Image 1 (cartoon, rainbow, N blue to C red):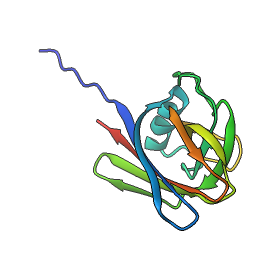
Image 2 (spheres, helix red, strand yellow):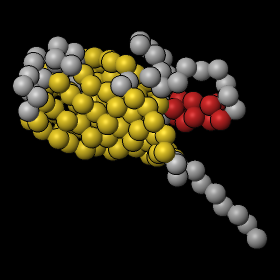
Image 3 (cartoon, one colour):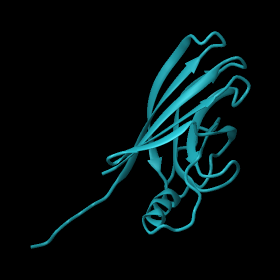
Image 4 (cartoon, helix red, strand yellow):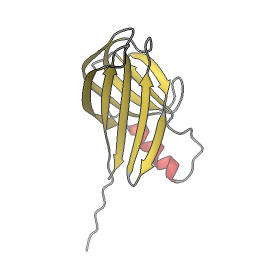
Length: 147
């Protein structure tokens, strides 16, 4: 008898844009790619390798298709510390808010990373343009599932 066990890491995020008065302007969902360095990071944490936890989220303006070998956003427009990172069963949920003045423009990519600059990237996604005006904020809830 041959046993087969395949572990996958997948993700999905919800992007919510609010105007300066807190009114919801747009809500969008997108799937993401857990990149090769992100999978290596996950494996290293299983054995307790001393590597900083995922603690930042970034947004950018590139439409280049995500690839397994990506290690950074192609054109980063802003990065913020995660508001939270929680684990429930096999799903990790990260949340972050990009306030007014941070990452303004035609946002088309996002990533989860473990440093305030550079660092290891867990996952990256691209999506149709989300316009973030100077007074707008973007809240992202990102769920990575290990299955």
